[in-house]
Image 1 (cartoon, one colour):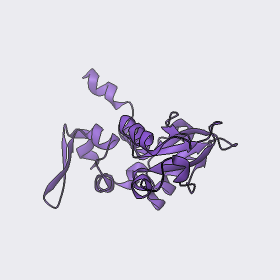
Image 2 (cartoon, rainbow, N blue to C red; image 1 turned 60 degrees about the horizontal axis):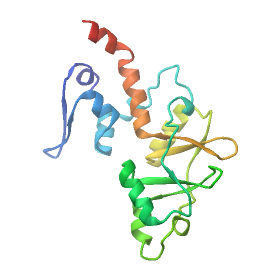
Image 3 (cartoon, rainbow, N blue to C red; image 1 turned 120 degrees about the vertical axis):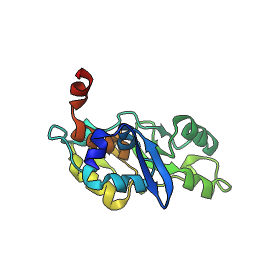
Image 4 (cartoon, rainbow, N blue to C red; image 1 turned 30 degrees about the vertical axis):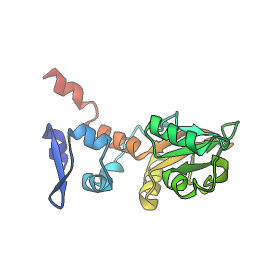
Length: 185
């Protein structure tokens, strides 16, 4: 896999005789099509972190997509579609993390509810700023999470770590600044 990633212009990943993803190595590492591709890439690659990346603060997206509990489910669906996400973090007026909603929750409960506050899921794994990346990676894989919200000591939402953030770290650990050498040739 390492040789394919370093040498190939394009990679085809197949499962059961069907193409799962056909893309550049960069795109496959940054945006694996599904869990099969992630497994194929190798979870060990996702846990190889560059030495200077230590905490979630260094890799998190500081602008997660959020809504407040008083937003309607219809508006939440529009936000998800516009921002191309399948879940939303729910925060109060002080940006305190109170839970999340996703497509499944909305689909199951939209006939009985009209606002997020009626269907919010409050059980949510989160990490505090300063948490080690390696611990977060292990938790994401062990629990099968898609993302982990990052909060400060007062539970205010400050960012989100996604599987894509982790793939970016893997990409950098494999290639580092080698791109500049390739371009110079």
